[in-house]
Length: 402
Image 1 (cartoon, one colour):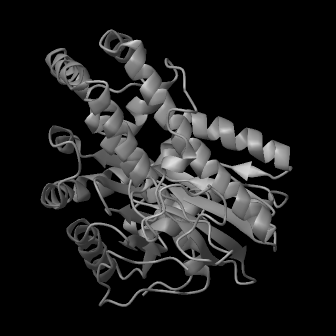
Image 2 (image 1 turned 135 degrees about the vertical axis):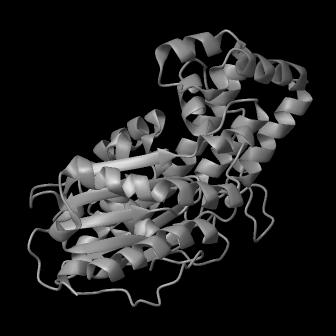
């Protein structure tokens, strides 16, 4: 086993859901390559099918790793370690990545490092901080990290240790749907392509949000059955004042009721068929031509509905995040995960952070969604502390952080 660093290079492998990714990162910061193979097949089903995801990972993982090495112009002999996502995620998908990484470590004699997917998202932000003056990376006081994606919505107090690693304390989480999951479910309800989050964000800018349409009182608390909580630290599933939990199930239900009350289903069905017929369902809303063509199939009422939904989600996330930051005296805020790419979320959080006098950081948009660069980055402190995984490493689908 190679235990003496010679290059600072780590090969990261990520396969927790529907992205097969490999990346070469130097010293936890410098991304030499980051290859992501997206599984477009799930768009036909409106969501990720676990069995299909595992099959696609098997098909993609070898060429993706080879491409990452090629783009970085390195070989296995140049590496210090191999890092892989241990969890959380889909069991079968995680198994593909872990099995491949274990075989690769055995064949090359390189140490294997297991990485928590959630910590990887946080390190996607830390890669953006390159100077000692940036407090979200190096300040001894805690920072507050929001990880918000299709599968996760968590708030963590992150505190650096003298060893260069971080300790995490979970101070809030979703009680039901993750924010990104709510986006995808509402998008599917409205006849939008999968994944729905980017489409919702792009379309919301063409609508006018109505704050009264989805007031915060419609977000339910799962454990208590309370249908009208305030979005503050008191609005949690316990009386613990240190919890800042969130909920999105009630908001999703409110959208469904709006659709039913206003008899929107016929127009939704027609829109979905038109988008497919014109080939727009497989396009990306980031393409101006695709978005312009798609907008011809949306009326003002639907665009306002989308804008109102997004406004409620973003304000929910912002209020709980900044309430937690104030309560714990956080010195900085980081936001990561797929939903952190949302344009309104970035604008809202940036504005509120400025008002609160708090530094705030986001990852590059390309590193917001699942990727292997963040896994390799999170592995670097573990390499420095010689924290390696055993050859008996297995997937942990429900792995927690902190």
